[in-house]
Amino acid sequence: MKVEVVIPAYNEGTIIKETTLAIAHVLERVPDLDWKITIADNGSTDGTKEVIKKMDNPRIMVYTASRRGKGLALREAFKQSDATIVGFFDADLSVDPKALPETLETIHAGKADVVIGSRFHPESHVDRGTYRSGSSRFFNFLARMIVGVRYADTQCGYKFMNRKGIELFSQNREDSWFFDLEFLVRGERQGIRIHEVPVDWIESRYPERKSKLHPFKDGVDAVIAMFRIRFAQ
Ligand SMILES: Nc1nc2c(ncn2[C@@H]2O[C@H](COP(=O)(O)OP(=O)(O)O)[C@@H](O)[C@H]2O)c(=O)[nH]1
Ligand SMILES: [Mg+2]
Image 1: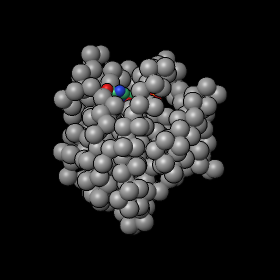
Image 2: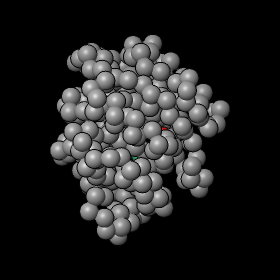
Image 3: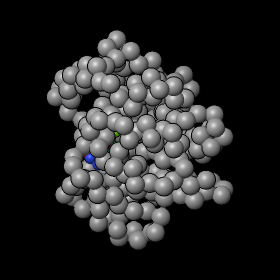
């Protein structure tokens, strides 16, 4: 099994090494796994790229995306991958990487084309403030109303897929935060098998770090994006 884990990273220089090592630690212990970790950066100015280069590990690389945007960086990084399973993991390590072996096995065994983490799964353990948790529930409620998506948690920073999922991802057009929603809607329409799995989630594993999300601006953009996605072909 050839696996590539992509970490989208914009100015994550202070935490990227620790996150990468934590994921590598889990991957190293999966038997018969040919793994690689790619940091998908685009224009970080805080030395994110240099931190990774200094690690000097042939399994850990940097991909430099052409423009800003988490969705765009992931789409470009996935496109250049030749792995059989590709996925992403947010740089703040909110999802505990111990979920990885089972996720990979589910896809490898052909039980799903795409596995996505859900913070609303009954078996998930979630450490998250009331405000973030409430706004996330509201986002998912609106997504169900406006776009008609049926997944409980479209935005969790943990999604893995086989080549069918990778092909689906390449059809994405949302470059920013809402690429996940577009991906899932398209997947539902095309009959891709998407499984939601529980995750252990700690919102602030790195207490010093601030979210890159701007609650008001990104909230307004979210509603606009939902309509754009609903009416996109
Ligand atoms: N490459 C890239 N990554 C980004 C960009 N914006 C956000 N990210 C990454 O997306 C992930 C999620 O960001 P985060 O601030 O944790 O968002 P939150 O979990 O919704 O608060 C992190 O790994 C960020 O570094 C971007 O423009 N480019
Ligand atoms: Mg986060």
